[in-house]
Amino acid sequence: MGWFMGEKANAGALTNFEVLDFLRSRGAKIDPMGCLGAVAASECKVYEYLLKTPACNQTRESIYEFVKRSEGFRLAEADKLHVINWRPSSPADVFAMIEECGRRFSKDERGEPCLEDERVEQFLDMVKEVLPPPPPKEEAMQE
Image (cartoon, rainbow, N blue to C red; front, side):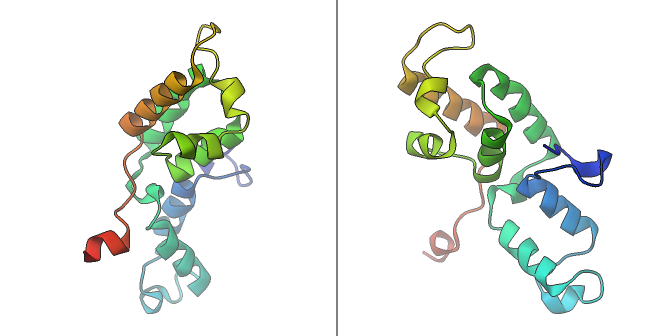
């Protein structure tokens, strides 16, 4: 996984944050007319979409911290990518995002059996502590 694509031109799967950061560096803006010439109109659309995802509030530091602290949960690289991109906020989100969640969360970081629901809550607490919340949804802002 390309936890920050600066090292290689073809770093594999990228987080939404990495794509957003790249588009910012190329001059992408919400107004497609404002970025003509700098980036393609399609890149401006992707940029506009990513500003509505958790990526818009993330930092390199928060992602590194998540990757480091998630090691005790034995997540696959794809699972880490899903969590970074979508920032789960409920146990249902975690079960939907993480493959074989029940099996992975049935043991603690020492490998001892534990209640998977408690382990999922521990994971969610860590996610909420480390990864910033997503932007408010447009509907919520208009109320």
